[in-house]
Amino acid sequence: MNPDFLPSARPISRLIEEFNKLPGIGPKSAQRLAYHLLQAPPERSRDLAEAIIALKQSLGLCSICLNITDTDPCGLCSDMTRDMTRICVVEEPIDILPLERTKKFRGLYHVLHGVISPGDGIKPEDLHIRELLDRLTANSIIEVILATNPNAEGEATSMYIQRLVSPLGIRVTRLARGLPFGGDLEYADDVTLSRALEGRQEMY
Amino acid sequence: MLTIFTSDYGKVRAIAKGAMRPGSKLGGNVELLTHSQLMLARGRNLDIVTQAQALDIFLPMRDSLELMSCGFYLSELVDSFTEENVEDGEMFGLFLDTLRALSDTGEGERIVRYFELRLLGHLGYSPQLQKCANCNRILQPEANYYNPAQGGMLCRECGYPDMAARSISVNVQKVLRLWQRSDIATAGRVKLNAELVREIKGILRDTVRYVLEKQLKSIEWMDRLAGESKLNGNKAASQNKDNGPL
Image 1 (cartoon, rainbow over the protein chains, first blue to last red):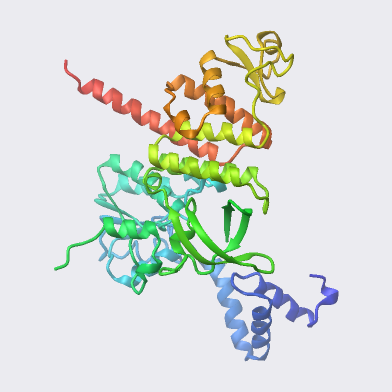
Image 2 (image 1 turned 90 degrees about the vertical axis):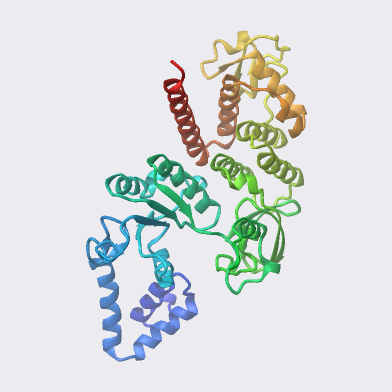
């Protein structure tokens, strides 16, 4: 954008531009956020700026599970009350949050930081699969739970990892695929329905 | 954001809002490598998918890493060879038949090679397999040469001095000629040994790379998988040998 044609003073325009680069923030929302900060007390802007700077400065990857953390190892890996014999493999750090919210899994995680995507040129070496295998051979892991997203690339990645892990004599499981709670059978796609039928369970 | 290949409108880019949310009505109906019936609303820049119903999900293909990878390769191939909003019903039919064959027969390699040859033919890049592409003489039933830059096969006289030409065996010539004029079911019945498959793969890949002027990204992945399968196969064979009767 040519600064000569910017309708606002330069600091505001700059902030609008920066907000506009964030996902899900369009030009109107960016404008609203910038003017909101302008009118808010100065400490709010300072807190926000400090939080953003701290995000990059104090965070890194856990050397064990590769989750984003401010301590190494991360809180999950250093929690001795967790089940150290099971590893749940996820695509991205953000995938850990919904799994933790269920409070059903007390094991450890491993973050791949992506999925195999041949069309985009993303290969297994671009993910943290080697680190996963190193963890499996060095520790007494009895189960690997594959929790990649249930789409074509996620499935391919899971199948590939399963091939590498199974020969180690470790149990490999995949998250069940089926109908979402609150979903509608009428609108379910055929893959989901087929998987839901395959994975049907006895009612007690 | 989706790239959709349609029979009536060619390649179209559209947005499927909320498709990744659990419980979305679009969800798996707009998943990669799914044959779906879609309703699109015209947008200012991009169309928006408002309804989707999967017609074929090619389930057996999704259960095999090799077949799924073939699907990835085919979709990259189609994407590379098509322009947006150019209708091509014939290519759509060929792509759909190929995905069905992949899923139904479980034959990855052969189906992919057949698709490459037919796709090249459909787009006007069919390799010359009957006459020498250089001197136009009828080719003798013997090992000849092949150079995609020349447009296909070369006789021994023209091919021998051509440093870029590769030798092509009689059996591969026969298979390619048959595939050029047969449907996918007939093509699937041709018996191919590993050597023939390797030779056909080299020839067609060279041609695709020459026409596109680039190497497709998914090729590296396909080769890697094939290499690993072969390695595992050899390991299993050697283990069987070790465990065999003394």
